[in-house]
Length: 421
Image (cartoon, rainbow, N blue to C red; front, side, top):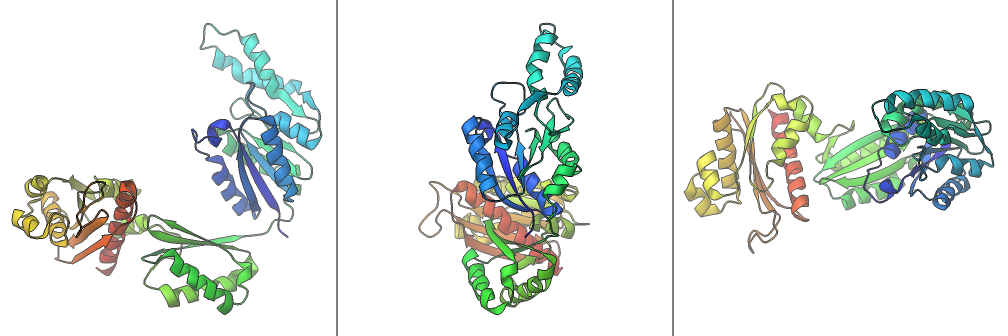
């Protein structure tokens, strides 16, 4: 059985959502790299009983390693070290050399303030030099030291700020107690397949069939997630199950070749950015409020190819800024494929681009008609050579969902057109 680990993220500000947890996901990736199986990530507030409960919960799950983040400061709500000492049955003792190192870090920081007594600050920071007997001290990156406490399980105590936790983790990995705790680790592979145009239930049906058709599939840990209208399948396995994964991928290709757009984990955004190399793209948007243009420019390197965009809600703006024929709007309505095509052509001409994408839809609330209810969105991709792809679809969800999913559909239509050029 491989080495198993658990994470305890402390901090009432994280528990209540005021601060997003960045440490848990980052540490999860590090465990995968090490070949350590992550069993649980728990988040608890700055309360002694809750920190104790989280530590004992993970120990009861049989983990070999627990990593905590947060609660290492000098204030009264920084309780992690004391909780870990209780959990390990160890006394806290003052590490005089560590206290001096912390004081040397704090002194120049306090020199900027005229009204701060350094000795008072030093007394407060003395708390950070209390360590469980026998613990391995990890030198501070900020002002808070970390700890590695050997045992069953071994506990690694890290600070909360990611800029401090991340370099300190790499120090912790090199310590003898941590290496001893993960001696049973293995080499995991993790593969990601992304699909578009496939319902999550459709993939679920295929995976149920795979239980019967793919021998050894029990050796694969498969998770699926619906995100931005795409289905993501992440598979984690040990090296001896590589052949099983190959057979699973073959089954997926046989069933869903059209819907699979990435077998190496690449995002559609990255694929579009690659396909845009050497091209100039413009956008025309109504219901998405410029979100597609922003998404295109967020991909590293793609901003060099985005020459401009128009956000035009009013019919007058579509006519005046993009040259859409008013008769076309009168005949088909602003939310229609002919108008979306006219918007794309207008953007193509206005910005001297060779590629253009247009989105026109009803994101709501309060809009729409019986024929074109909220969530109706029309798309068009046009190339300078006349290549055109139009599509109208219905998007579920609220305004934010419709807008977000619309940009995803536009990216996939763009990918499809550019891949065929």
